[in-house]
Image (cartoon, rainbow, N blue to C red):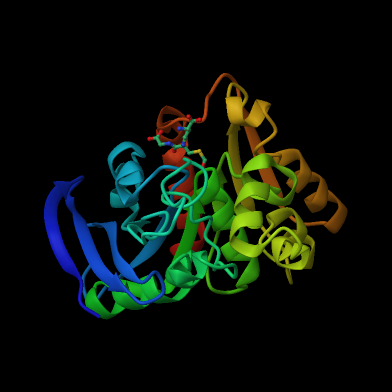
Length: 284
Ligand SMILES: N[C@@H](CCC(=O)N[C@@H](CSC=O)C(=O)NCC(=O)O)C(=O)O
């Protein structure tokens, strides 16, 4: 699987690569960004933190506005910033709304036509992208991977971690969609990608349902802004995840950040805390 380098940008002592590769899962070329710290080498490979972005985003948003690289460079951690959906599938309705279709893959494998044609972001993030990255970049360590994400990407980070015990060393999230089966964004996405009636599958991609079933302890870090309009509208529902954690005796720490909104100003303000959280597990 070949990766094309479209740009190499000096960044916090390391390099930010703008990349593209053919994806079988998504049935199209997928772009992504990859930050490699200067400390990474084939004899001392760097661990990787995956950052999953939210609705309307590409792999550029986190790389250009998230401010992860400062702390990642200091800690010697690489950061991968994938896209949020396949692109250009020519499916009717694909570009009609910001919260479904292009830019809104929800990190699931669609089971409902016509979305099965390429909306396989779960397989892409858990299998295909890591395979491509680790076969190309010997300076990165495939045994040490953590995951984080924002909003829809926070949902992705939490569910991929909880569905795959051992795949990721740690998880954290910024303003995650924490209980998608019970909010408008999640209901629209799951109805479209899985069908309205397949509630079992909805539950298999819902962090609040998955957490109690996770084998073992968790140490999940979440930040949410109290000025976040999507939080106020009930799209995020972190309290439901906290309640599930309390009942199941799992570790989830939600920091409610006074006055912060849903934007990259919020993400960049707390990005270093999330890299530190990943570092605790990636570097031990
Ligand atoms: N256009 C939409 C709002 C879209 C939006 O706010 N997207 C967020 C993620 S929301 C959850 O996944 C985002 O990260 N946007 C990109 C950015 O650079 O800020 C609307 O009008 O409501």
